[in-house]
Structures are given as structure tokens and as C-alpha cells.
Image (cartoon, rainbow, N blue to C red):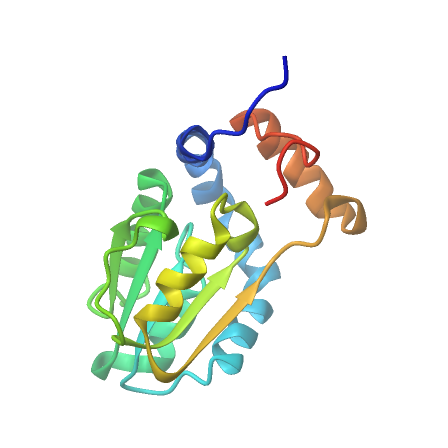
Length: 189
């Protein structure tokens, strides 16, 4: 009997998996972000984020690129950082407080497919390493697109197929084992 892909179960597994590894991300956030900061800065640059703007960060994890964007928008702007994992958001909140950014960033637990946002309310949207994990990508992209003001920009980074990126292949395999990701043959994300 062929197994069927259940996107809701997939998201439940993702949430549980990310919640279970959040403490490890908290312990290792400095080397992770040291290696990833160039990408966060590039996403902010590509989205043409400026002081005073409103920015949406999807799948923020432990708070990036939301924190990089918050430093640019300053106290006159706002960043809404969303993630499916309550525990990853808890780490992000701690980090934002320690960096003096807590009053600029709002954190909200939500998956991108179920975002409840006003249309045309953001100048830019960012997503670093999240889109490729969304089972209903069209729905997520539509929600993000509708949340952007006219002329708003989306800047996103995704992983290539794991075999093309050996370090990601290792991470994907470990995460996949923890959250029981379906094989790439069962459903193309």
C-alpha cells in the first residue's frame, strides 16, 4: 500500500522536530550565525530594506534574518518574525532582548500557510531556509505576496537538493531522521 503525504502531519512533525532541537540551536547560535550572517545581510540588501519600514520574516527560527532587518529599520520600523516552532521563537526572543531589539521585533507562532496578515501591510518579506520545507508552497507564497505593499519585495534563500550541498545533506539527513521527513520521492516540496 502506497503511503500518502499528509501536509498537516508533516507540519506537526516539523513543529515537534524544531521544538526538540531548539535548545541545541540556542547553544550553537553564535557559530551558526557567524557563518550565516553574510546571507542575512544579502537578503536585507536584496529586499532593499530601509529605516522606518515594516518587514515580515517567515520561518525565522532563532531570529534571522529578522534581527539583521531590525537593525536596519531601527526604532521607526517594525519586524514581524514568524515561525512554526514555539521553542525556536523562545530562543529568538531571548536573543532579540540581549541585542536591544525586542521593541522592534514582534514574534508570532504561525506556519506560513496560515498567516493572518493584513493585505499590503509590509514593505518587504524575507525567508532564509524555510520555503523548501513548506508542503503547500503556493499557499505560503500567496499569503506573503498579498501581505506586501505595491512595490514590496521578497528575498528568500533555499537549500539546493541535498546531494549538491554536502553540509546541508548532513543537516537534512539528521533533521529528517528527527522529524521523519518523507523521502523526496514521495512528495516534491
